[in-house]
Length: 49
Length: 228
Image (cartoon, rainbow over all chains, first blue to last red; front, side, top):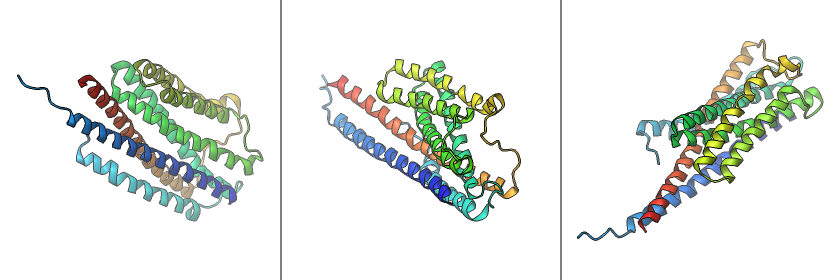
């Protein structure tokens, strides 16, 4: 039973850490996209002649 | 970022994580409470119910890498390249699980953590090939040339999978083969595989979303640079 618990624990830990790392990266990227979008919106539009 | 219909977004963002959680709980309950012990190997044999689905999901991931890479080389679509990248990473996660659960199962049955059995060795080779693919994508930059080299590696790497399957017949390894199974064992394997398919799809979706976000950042930066 010890080996069975060890195998299941490792599987859950690996999956948990991967999901955590992907969602952290995703949050950071979403924040960066938002910042860049705001920068593009703040850009002055070219004067019309 | 690539837009999805509200229907698809609900399925992938809301239903899929809950379905995965329910599937994983059902799989746990069946492995620990329902399926009987195997006569020879005892409780340790139950590791099989996570080991085999992990292997199948790793293979699925690497087949997606090969397919998407071929599509990228053929049509040059950026979305195919992103799918290949996401599938390689998720496939690597499952291949790592195979290489971690295998030795834990081998120790009480064979008396050793690792042996250079053909199937084990070929699985390690598979892991190394796609580790190289992931490292190439992470450290070599995000250029068209790197994407093309990676696509070729992703296609060549998948050849290892059929070799891995026939390895037992070719070199007479000691790795067990699945031949006959009691109905309880077959049901447990089916539920575990279903749960792993949901988990694989969800992880692939999550990773694909972050790659699309990174793609958006590159496009926005180029837009800002061009307009400044």
